[in-house]
Image (cartoon, rainbow, N blue to C red):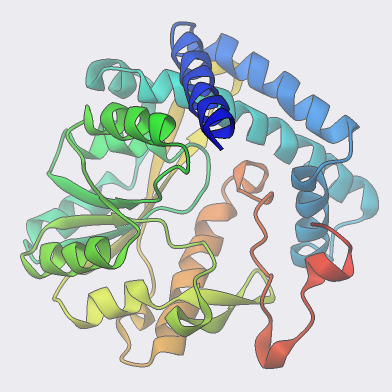
Length: 307
């Protein structure tokens, strides 16, 4: 056991060292390295490759094989870029992170939400590189956001410290962290959340997403029901040739404020779809979004023998 612990501790240090090194190079070089990682993902069988392939078959049945294959390859390429960008963004000063933002679309949506002073529930899908938003939003308002701690304590400590350099206040995905989110949004604060990951069954409801039933978190619905907060969505779109990122703000349908959890979750997923349509190749299709199906339906990844 001590030997395994020792080896595990060293692995965290190695990952942090790689991230720090990637943070020393220009964004365009990091993205080129990431694109190379994406190419390797497409060449050799691995879970990310097979999950992305199946997800795209499920959500884009209208595409021909050639179109879907092209989208699949570009998705893996963009996925590789995300991995290499993290060192750049986590290691960047707020000023450097802000310098990567080129254009901001629908900024008035954010300004209107802040002007109401009722609190904001800011939903950020895994699209483009969501870490860019930390650098931008924290220049305008205080932000509380939930994060999933890394399993490796060395990596987790470095990630947490690096992210908090922007001024963001992070709470973990624990019961204590969830309670803090509720307290913050009731105080009228700006709360950030990633809304497109599968929750535990008791914490979600099924709602359509990209034409598929998806177990959708109830947390957003509950935060809105217990506060007067305004819901707003935001995402970044990666620009070509290392030029940086554009930020987009999107207003959801009013149904997101419904007292009915399924109606609210349907509006939530509809807003995520609207974000994805801007850059479908930059969405996290490597994530098993449809593992659980209604009425104990078959897990599509298990059927496809994807571990």
